[in-house]
Amino acid sequence: MTSTPVKNLLDPGFELTLRPMRYPDFYERYRDAIKNTWTVEEVDLHSDVADLAKLTPGEQHMIGRLVAFFATGDSIVSNNLVLTLYKHINSPEARLYLSRQLFEEAVHVQFYLTLLDTYLPDPADRAAAFDAVEEIPSIREKAQFCFRWMANFDGQGAEKIDRLESREDRRRFLLNLICFAACIEGLFFYGAFAYVYWFRSRGLLHGLATGTNWVFRDETMHMSFAFDVVDTVRKEDPELFDDALRQEVTDMLREAVDAELQFGRDLCGDGLPGMNTESMRAYLECVADQRLARLGFPALYGSQNPFSFMELQGVQELTNFFERRPSAYQVAVEGTVALDEDF
View 1 (spheres, rainbow, N blue to C red):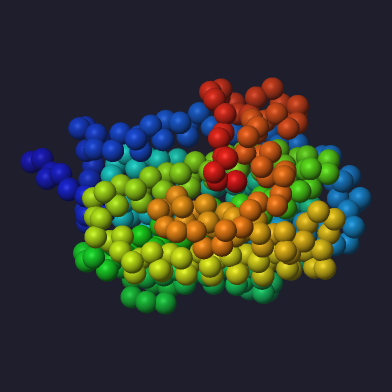
View 2: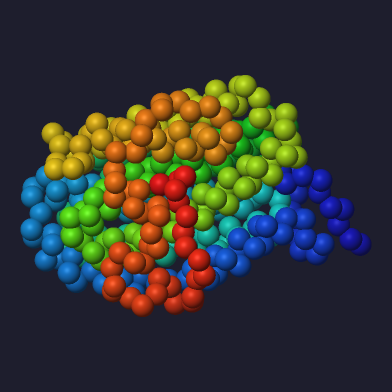
């Protein structure tokens, strides 16, 4: 007996048939992701240890907060992949990509664990970093934001949704997916990357920047895939994209900027040369507007990117910053990363 094909991407069920292929673009994204294989062992952090000793107390505080956020951020993403996205995106092609993405998130978690072990040799400091979601208010606020907007699918704050039976179920799923793509991968991590590249622009922490280059590329692909899923749902279920959803997404991005700015105040304090809370505010607002534009919604802020080192990140080949390796990955990748609209 053959299974009856589902009509839409979010229809309940568990489609198993790859032929005929309903969403070939998702399959191509999976194939492209395979080319981007890298391992944590390729990242050389030895020079970072000497650089850490050169940092001012304010800069050391910033690094400590960054690695504390990294230690838990990708774990939230990985859990949502398994508990929500893989379960409800009913396409075997998409699930191939999500399986690959889960592997990449595991590599990121390993990279951040290695950072913690290298940067924080004291076991008590490492334990405090792993408790950041509970113990550091600025990180706790970001985690609570994630749980609020991605609720209902894992029992957080409401009855768990096992199947997308109704229009309201699909709306909640869309909010989860958009939060995942636009706010967590597309804003929280991009804010953290900006701090890393600020250090790099000053010739510091090359190992951290090298690993972040590869994480940056992975996260950009994750975000692009998620937005492709949103585009597909928009074509198949256009009635979901009404004024109410636009307002909810706009409110979500505004709340995400506020949470990330609170984190920025924690990191920057009274300000560091070339990095302060007001510059980070403009950067975050600019990124938020880009995420809204990608979703087809009006801009909220109208701010410009104040960080020239992030503009450089978007127009140069990521691996040309340091001649530490002959290529970015173990497997050759053709072309460049074009991030002029998503820095």
